[in-house]
Image (cartoon, rainbow, N blue to C red):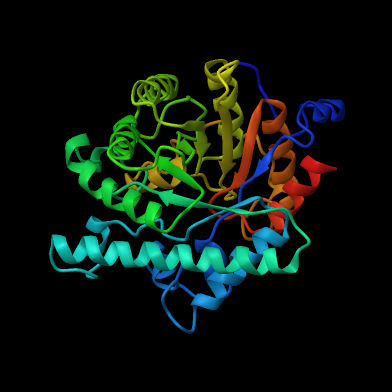
Length: 351
């Protein structure tokens, strides 16, 4: 496979995508932590939606992404799922878990909508949209923890139904480490009244540039299955892609899956992590294999990161330019990205 780097495309390649890219927002959890609102955990982040002292900060972060040039913001509801409610002690049984998750999803949509209303009131920007997050039901990255398709469908039906009631503009099915999660989501969507809401499906892949999902599933096969299933169920699948992975791995993945969407009308989406230590390295360290991932070739250089190990905004924007040249039409940021990153992305894609 061809090696790529952020500077591997000449500036005239930008002409291929100028004005055509939808800019998605960046991360929420680490931004909340940086503003002193949470300890960085997903649960603390989602609870901030309904905390009277913290909700305004969630809205402010959404607003900052919109002001940075993002077209779409994502609901801060990544772990607002029933089984996580029970695991975290926020519910004691299945009915209360379903209810608690639904309440948190509604609060998350309220926070996002408040930010879009402020932007709309300013009257200086085009209409902004809200993507309703449809996340993994278990700890993300660990495919062996993912339940069966049939077990997942009831929870996804609740999540989808709540997002429909809240009138989100897009379904963002993100950070999926297995194909069966995507299948369960599409089957849940087929049982709902969501026929006119666009669906974006995004997988998380290994950072060793193997074009495998973190579960070991083939990325190509996972994308192909979802494209076929959405078609058979007559669902409005609008985009498919990769997120929550290293930027260099995402570049490789786009090279792999772009032929699948060529001429299909589907969009490619891409939004990566901004940590110098990759998720694959972190997962390897959990197994005591600290050297396995570090032995793999790093495409990025140390100069692209700040002293805390975060990818610099201008470096991330160069990756965004590369992804656009590779055909991505939806580009955002994932873990570790901030409004500063997305401002650089919006600027470089629209200059």
